[in-house]
Length: 225
Image 1: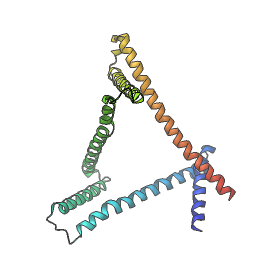
Image 2: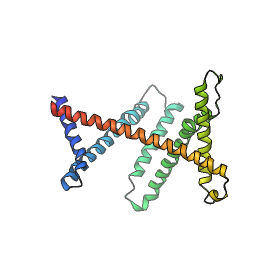
Image 3: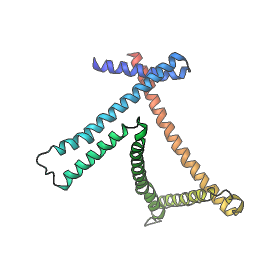
Image 4: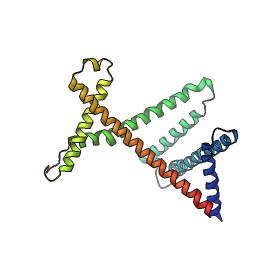
């Protein structure tokens, strides 16, 4: 009975989302927005539950653990981190008070700076450094690994020409003062960039079509049942 109820709710929500295809009518707008609001609300609730069980609750349990001394570095660090996060959360609640907006903005600034730092470190360690390593890595046996050599050359040419394109694209007068060879490098870099963006777009479209086909198949299966 529970599985049938879940399938029925999924069926109704799917129809509410697909109702957007019928046009911007008042009833259709209400159905589509209701489905979107339900999705956003459930996502926020799920995030809250996961944050509580995976972050807040472990800190509370660690603080209340009698076997751990409050003077140890690990437990003290947990207490400091927990109350710092709690303080930041309370300061965010002061946003409606205009005279204390600077406190909320300070928290936003800290969050943005930390997020940007994490993003930069992730981009360097996860993208730039592996790309540089793949660019300069030469197969040990070129005759036995011809495909690897071709991949290495494509990566090297694509990386260098793409960087060349972005470097000279930032200068408005670069095209007039460039030689034919420089314009050729920029064209090759542009071709690599367009190819990469096209591959990303195609992958996104393929994922979307896969999800769409699964939803359409679900509708037909539920209707046949």
